[in-house]
Image 1 (tube, rainbow, N blue to C red):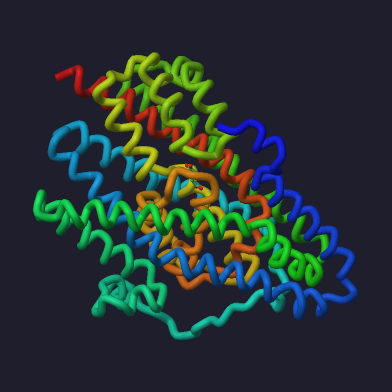
Image 2 (cartoon, protein in one colour):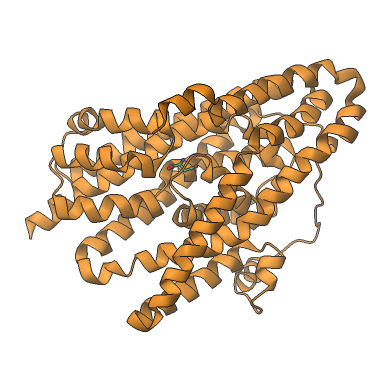
Length: 405
Ligand code: ASP
């Protein structure tokens, strides 16, 4: 696009990074006057978070509906669709589990912060497993959205999405309407994300002022944890899958994927990487008909890196607040992060919006996003790389399976 424009304008990622550095420096300078940061800076961060909370409901509802609707092609492509969706869901669930496992190993190294600079109301009432199950199902159309009950919003989106598929051509107008509203809300999300530098500064500065340099060290630890998981997932899960199901040497796979991997790492966008991913996968032997179905679908609904990031950040944020996550909460995180994958757009920063949904689903404070938002781009580069590599591994495997028959 306009090279000139990007020369003039600082990219958003650079602005966010600049805001992060500025927030740390100002926070350290304000340590003796943390109250000032709390009273005069934090409210602007709260405005940013409110906007994130506002958009997460519509984004989840509409993008999951449009994700489900895009699956209607499954009928047309028969077994390709079936294998693809099973592979996508299984690898994403494994990714979240890996993220949770390693984040729990790292937990001792994560700090408990003075969260007075963040707000969190906890409900002390214990909730049983059965209650949790019952609460997943909405009894009202509006409450899930107004109460930000993300699990209920997901159930609504799935029900409506499947109903639209079943109605077939009768629901054509609804399909285009939903796709249009998805685009509209995505645009709103983009507008909100463009405020990230201000949000990051105003959220992080009071936290650093209240907690000192400890926060900075903890960010390095949580990033390291996420990257270890990204690498483990790629090396273990994709290598094994490509080798056993796709009959391809993992070395050949990763070598052939190098251009797409580099592009994804620098662009942080699965959708943007799609053309180059198609090319790499086809060069590696994926058939054209399979890759042109599997890869666009993957760029829309398959986000293993994002799922890992959400698992790791959920444990990190919980531990910063001194909250212990129960097994049931962990299982809920695996389920919601897997579903969040369907609703995450393949554009930079989308995973952070969906993190709000994962946190809400287990009652963790959305404000905790403040702790990781400043380095989101660094998380995003790795998670996007993993996202597109997962899509390509699926194209190789499905091609091999289809050609066998
Ligand atoms: N940037 C990621 C992607 O394009 C989505 C995310 O933010 O997690 O795959």
